[in-house]
Amino acid sequence: MSTSDGAEVTRWARMTVERDPHLRAAPASAQVGYFAQLLPDTAIGRHAVQHIETALRPREYGIYLRPRQVALGARAQWLDRQERIAVDLRVILGSGEHSQFNAALRAGYRQRARTGPDGVQYFPPPNRLLPGSHDVAGFAAAVVDYDWIRQLVRDFAARPGHGVLGREPA
Image (cartoon, rainbow, N blue to C red; front, side, top):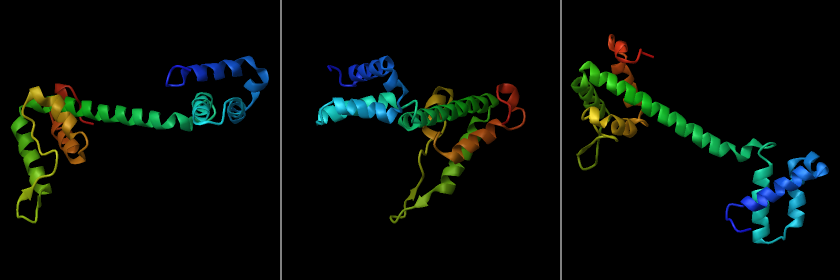
């Protein structure tokens, strides 16, 4: 077993299950138990059984794949929201309302600002404006997690007449 990802041991376990009709018909827990009896009860043996269990159970127990799928799904949604923001920002820039949008952002930051014990006013993150078309992707990435900014972008892009520039109001 020369690789650290357990590829050889899982390949061996899968081939063994495929070739043995009784083992193939057994539930995944019995299959894993079979291999656990064959391997030594040491840290390395138990680790190999974990690899085998992960390889054999996904068909029966989706929980082994679910965390990765959820993470990938969340990442895909995050990227989709970021791309939506970028599209809407291009609509705003194309409409000539860039300065009005930045003014609305400033007002939003001021509204959410807090005064610290030192009397200084602190603005919430990401506390940035949209400098121009060269910064659409960076701005979208910086603001994607802030609901109020996403809504502001959506509202500006959905103003009457902006749909002809590439996005109908949603």
